Image 1 (cartoon, rainbow, N blue to C red):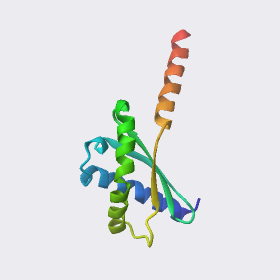
Image 2: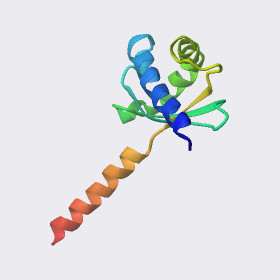
Image 3: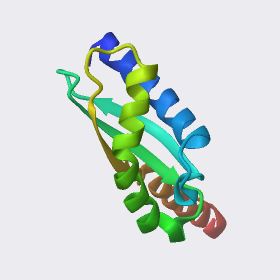
Length: 113
């Protein structure tokens, strides 16, 4: 990816996190952490990766984020200096859970020795 697209992605992460924290009224979204944003090369589409504090509310959070997409995108129009704000798709980030699983396996191996 180009430096420009990476910079736009990191700016979107910062702004979406701020919007979720301060302006969204839905309680299911309050404890969401935006981990990454992959923007397409034509800047028309963005995959926003997130995690939640409570894994039990993963489905409710996914629905709430899907419903808040339009609101978040409209707020991004005011905050991000882009001609067109990309369409947002929120994807649950499995990498943290995967990393915890690998860490637990490594700890078990060390305990056996």
